[in-house]
Image 1 (cartoon, one colour):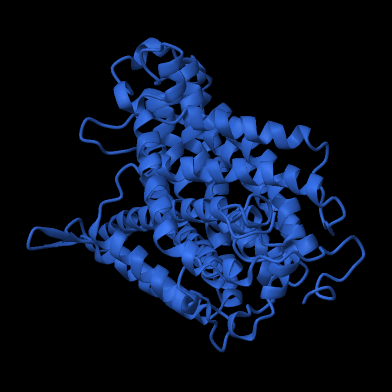
Image 2 (image 1 turned 90 degrees about the vertical axis):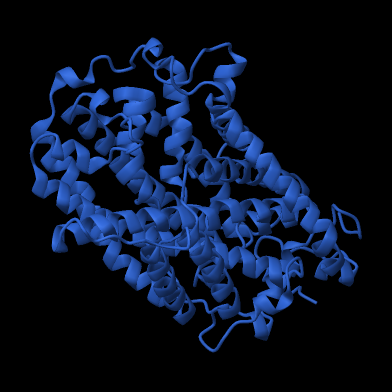
Length: 512
């Protein structure tokens, strides 16, 4: 739908042609294995090391393993849609780029703004968690007096998070391939730690701890009420969204955070050697690996101790995987898990920052943000965008407490999944002859199921999360009309229509 209005679309042909601009060209040197490593690197992190125990103790009990399965099903449905889109439009930007080709510029901006919520806020939150684990590890080495923060004039400075962000910003500016190699080493370490949790933890499992598998909702009546209650629980007249069926569903929406990141693989499509095959394999392969590890870990941890021992303490201290081993008097194992978590969170922050940089790069190349951010350096990386993202994430992680940001990240990601799933169906109808390296089976059934599954999870997030999400979206709309709409490259080109590449044709051959 070309034109100068809010719904002007950027053709797939034009999106691909823009990747050849000399000043904003990314180096194509990633393989399917690199993408799988990125996916596993970002997904196995904060979710598995922190959310598993906390969700079991506060919301779902032993049924947290089932909550992981429900979240994985929604992710798998959306992943199929991501795989088709990424193999059809192998351009940086992920859901932002896909939406630009199907729904038009305004919704593309909205989804790009939404991805800031997922990647940048997620990076800051996980970096703060990383600093907490760093303090724990330093305590093992030098005593309990070591801290990773200090106060200056009433302001708390988290130097641990700042140190991490600076190091990762330099690494990402040097090159994506090097980042992939570093991720591979660290990912191997944390996968080994997760396997250790599963295999060693089995010896402490007691069948009695699995009963009741879905605890009665009555045990949570004093928690998760008011604006902290899930939307679905409120609509259904429930008094609480802790434990019972409401707790299980709320748990699925919360542990969804543990899967966030596989869509980052799609943001690197432009830097992949053979994106039509490598990107789908990277997305689906990483998701399959982590789902198996997550469910196994959840079953072991809730079998090691009663779920009530994993509840958040009166002092607000959340329980982790290490807690289950400490409660079984295996402190050395708890210490080992803390070190593994430190390594694991490192790659999570790095890949989330990578995703944010690539989305910012794509939006800048389209003029919706300052075009200078899309310039690439001698190494083929968007250095300016990398420095900007590093600075913003560093400021947030250094001076602001993480708080309860998981749900904010979840609602933004689920919204992106809904648009991508709908976009695949739209593109199938409007441009059926496009080259597709991967095709979603049983479309539109899978697409509709993905949308319904994501909307269902969104309904099980808290009312307060929805209020914050709407406020963030309103701010994004203001920025679009104040700046982005007037500077859009597509708008200045007149959004003239062009013939799209068809199966068997070279997409660059038809570029103008």
